[in-house]
Image 1 (cartoon, rainbow, N blue to C red):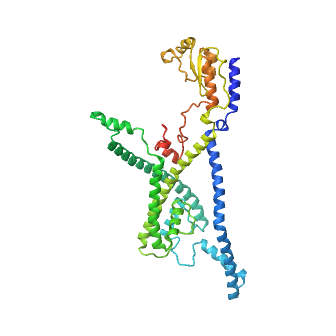
Image 2 (cartoon, helix red, strand yellow):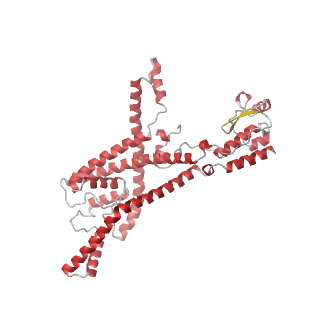
Image 3 (cartoon, rainbow, N blue to C red):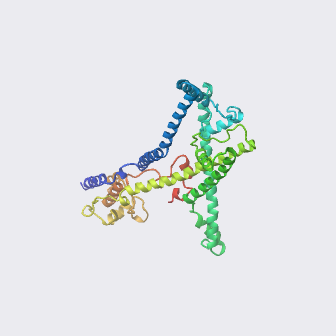
Length: 420
């Protein structure tokens, strides 16, 4: 009867706990991120609409005026002019421009095209126009994009490892200068090794280094594009971000003219800048995603019950038939009596006593009847506060067991360490 009363009381306590304890943490994080992304999209749409809509209306009004003036001055019907413009749009899709540009489908142009395909940049300045070309692109992009994503992940793994090694070396030198890791005699190497055993670089320092590297690459590439493409420096920076982040709008595309000064050197430098920029920005995005995930964990922790404590009053005194006990922060700290101590030896616990923190199941309780009811009460209370026990290894900070870039950076940074 006492067991039934305890179970009913704890179940009602658990039902009144926060919603976050009833939903899986990963699902809660996913739903929260989806909601925040939707809010982010709405805010971005409002900002861009306010910034760009007036310019679009002015451009449309100016274009209508130019069409009207052209038809009047050249005595051309508006319908015939529209037909000519539609034909030009079709030619534009095939790579035909008013100004002379480099050939689209010679070997160098095709190589530039496949580079934008496998890197997922997709500028759109030229696209396959034939049915066989479109079919080949589907299968070519399927394998090429997957291989390139793998390359980016392997690059991320190596850049994180290299940065961690460099930062650990700097940290070790700083400790040696300050004298924190040094002791006299033969114990000095072992002491330094122990002091650095659990050290890992912070994600914020890695983000700073990758951010500085990305800015340096973008600024250097922008200087090159300013001189070779006759773009403004702001347009060059804009192109660098759009290209390096693989957004690839296609309004500005480098290396498209028919002729440049030092053409081969410029095309080689352009490819190298884009490759380095894409790798650095990809790594930077993944490091920033760790900070975003930390923020989501913090929000979930703030939304959850403070300290994951049950707001209701869990059963306390008067429900325990035997044993001495005391309560601290809604948890039971049990001191077993002599009968429980004797039964603990049967379970093989060292010293003949069962630890108060050891958890048992209801089946063990009903089968052996040698364990105090206080342990069962503690188990039920902790289950109501923290959810059911998991048979697998617990996940720390929500990064263990991740996939993709999260799996690569797992336990390599302070914020993704399993010891955190």
